[in-house]
Amino acid sequence: MSTDGAIDFPTGTFMHWCESCGLEELLDSRDAYDAGWDFPPHMGTRGVISPRTCPNCSIKNTAWWAIAIEDHGIDEMTPQERKAVGRILDELPPTTSG
Ligand SMILES: [Zn+2]
Image 1 (tube, rainbow, N blue to C red):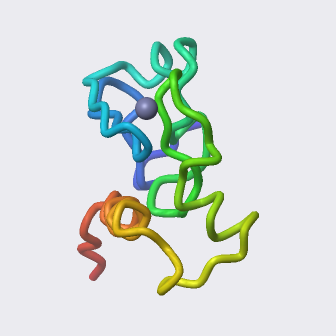
Image 2: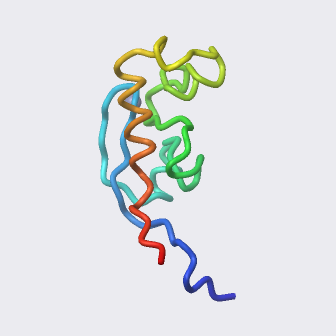
């Protein structure tokens, strides 16, 4: 089946970043998954808050954990967590519908 016209999120090489330790690596998404990254599209969805962590970090240090598990509001989050949320929401490509 062709998926022409569907939004095709990159499954190739793109920047992976860890919201916990700040590590950034240009990785193939499959290699990243094999290495232990929690990162879309294999783990989670781009533009949706979920853990963004490198193989060395726990998801307990993510904005997702603070929101979903610890039930923190935005004003209870650390600056680092807020920054991660902003960066996650920024992952979606600009829509050019119409
Ligand atoms: Zn990390």
